[in-house]
Image 1 (cartoon, one colour):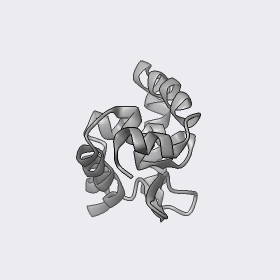
Image 2 (image 1 turned 45 degrees about the horizontal axis):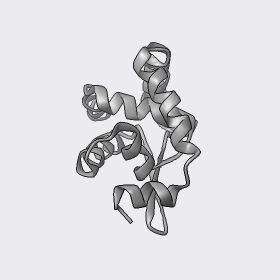
Image 3 (image 1 turned 90 degrees about the vertical axis):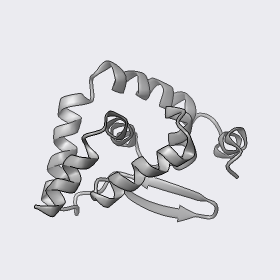
Image 4 (image 1 turned 30 degrees about the horizontal axis):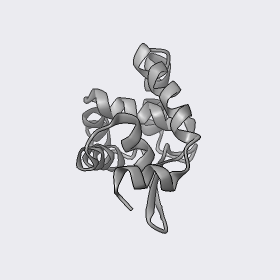
Length: 121
């Protein structure tokens, strides 16, 4: 029940759902996520923390960058079902489509350039 409640809390915010959907394209650096949503880094960090706590995303650190990704097939069943449910329900919404287009542009930009623009590195 505890995992279920953490997942429902994580998915109760539209911005967290948008971040979650953006990660369908693959692993993203915090800088790329911040660039996509144009929120303050502290806001992005809080959203990522809630998603991570619920087990909906995984993280790794490489040098000065922190990357987030969706869990793989070894995740708990409830997590995999939440991934599928959100994807099936919302992947084709106008918000998800617009985010996807913007993300494609961001992924073409060098990570160091994004970080310098955000003054985070």
